[in-house]
Length: 273
Image (cartoon, rainbow, N blue to C red; front, side, top):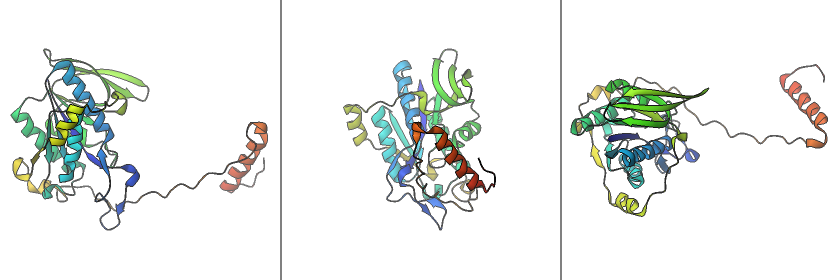
């Protein structure tokens, strides 16, 4: 069973800065990590390999430094890593990003069968949750979003059974293979990298595919291929510390009266408690 995992290298959310000129995240000099949801997708792909055999291929789009995120996934147990990197890809929104990654997946699928494509449910820097479904649409694959568990993979019947998270519980659904899943963090616990895998990851050099290695049209790449227009982006102000009202359990009625007065004052009301 061959699995492809789409990952993204994202800024550490505690270090996010925004360029006021371009309205884009400043990534230079900012610590980067594997998008957490994508890390869980990678872990699940490795577990599938352990259960059913096959290979795990990591594919990502980004600048050259994104090879570090791919190597991190190799340390988890992935077999192969591919970075889609080209200046022509810079500035892509989710529409153009899904177009480029889909082209990379098409090339991969022309080289070897791919039974399952796993993505994180969303990236923590953009929080759009659009690339996974966009890939499924571009590749004409069935998709199961918010996957919380892979119950069974029947390679003979070419079916996968998946539990997906809903607001009201868990829904179990089936889909034909190949299929695309977007994974949530409850799906598994990420293992510690083994020493042999860490050594292999340190020595591993991901393949790099650029514009000329993919069947893409220039007008659909980067800024030119991105219909999304960002008028303004900003970091929210830090929250001011709240007020501690003395009394606690000793005088709950008095504390409630103080809170009510403060709420009335904040709302500009004239009534009294």
